[in-house]
Image (tube, rainbow, N blue to C red; front, side, top):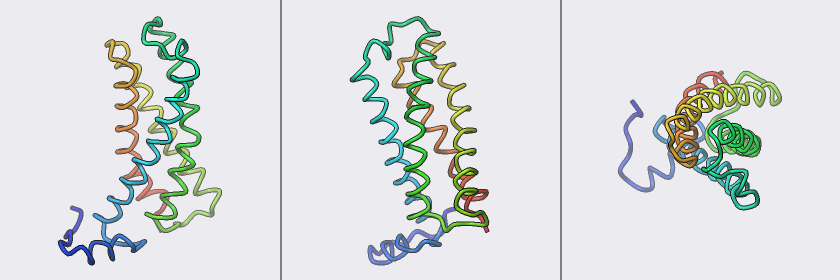
Length: 158
């Protein structure tokens, strides 16, 4: 599926340096960008928790928890999405058939679609009384899986 993964470190690093490298190298770099983008998202969520702990409390009524976490995640989405776009464009994918602004718009649209799916899953998990951090983690993982496929084949395709 990912192609042959080389065993020699020099070959591994040579293939990781290629923009249009093998699928395993693209997926690995995409994963690194995703982890870093998730770190941006988590950092913003941590700032909410740090500066407004009563706003992010697990003791709030369910509707308030859902609403507050939605606001925090949407706020975190903006810098995380921009970080993801620029790192993916720089390290993983070659710009495709769209111009810069169109590419950013399609990239963001795909992110919003996966954000919405994650939002529905997050709400379902909160209804089942999972803690906010588990619901937010499930949100991040589902978004990453949808985004790789859509970005590779829609945004950065030629």
